[in-house]
Amino acid sequence: MSPSSRQTTEPGTVRVRLYRFDPETDREPRYDTYDVPHRPRMRIIDVLDHIHDIEAVDFAYRWFCGTKKCGTCAVNVNGSPKLACWEEAECEMTIEPLKNLPLLRDLVTSRDPFEEALATLAPMIARKESYEGFPEPLSAKDMAGGDHLRDCIQCLACQSACPVLQQPGSGFAGPALLVQLSDLAQDPRDHADRARLADEVAQVFKCVSCYECERVCPTGIPIVSEAIEPLKRLVYGKGAVGARRTRAFVEVVKARGYADAARIALKTNGVSLKALRVALRLGRRGKLGLGSVLGDRSAPAAEAIRKAYQSHEDAE
Ligand code: SF4
Ligand code: SF4
Ligand code: FES
Image (cartoon, rainbow, N blue to C red; front, side, top):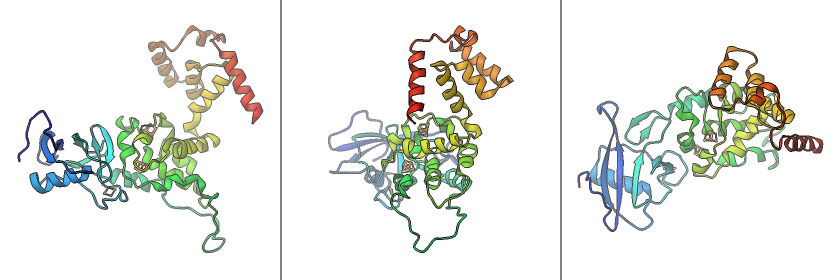
């Protein structure tokens, strides 16, 4: 059956709009439509296999283990990244390649940027001390920090979902790399300067905590709370450059009881051309109120927030 343009799904079929693009020969991407006979418990990969075997032998896709182990089969289905070998087929699916990775052909993206970036994060345990014994005496408690992180199968679904990575030249490493880095940073045997790597190389503070990566992770890793936040805490504790804005935010809210945008920008960037540009931008968005300029401390509930900070500190 050749690609069709019918609008309705026939009973017992899966209607697929399939992304096709070969950057070497095609001018622009296109979507081919296929109706695939449905089978009980049919997975997305079964649908792709059918299209490849019966309808379009030149169509490129990738999978290896078929059992949620190798992380090679992730694709976007109806706009959300999914493991094709693990998720059930839906009756209507638009299937596209993962985002935020260079496209090789059709559904196949290059993993090179991920592998190259991983190599810059010293992705092995860096020891200062020799082994205490072999096998090394490590308790479950010692290794609890990175426990869930070691479930990562490097499928890159989270990289595809991250909105920060959609900004060209963001410099942000992305969630999949932060998971690897955080696992090492929480390993008691590791003595590399993970705070510097998280701050300067991975730029962890560019994460906006939107939780999209966690939402799509097929192995259910709590990426934000167990990988990214521990890294942010590590960087913050070392007073590194990337934590400057967070530190300024905490200091300003603690002192004034509200997030005074102008003061946070000033504390973060100092008096500079950059600070002036940030102030102008805040002014245009209406976030630079008179209170910021005149030192007004009467924002609603400001006193309660200051007290909450104080009692939290007293309790620590
Ligand atoms: S929480 Fe951070 S890393 Fe995860 S998708 Fe959002 S911005 Fe990206
Ligand atoms: S953290 Fe989850 S979504 Fe991201 S690469 Fe690992 S397994 Fe895939
Ligand atoms: S084919 Fe290995 S995880 Fe899907």
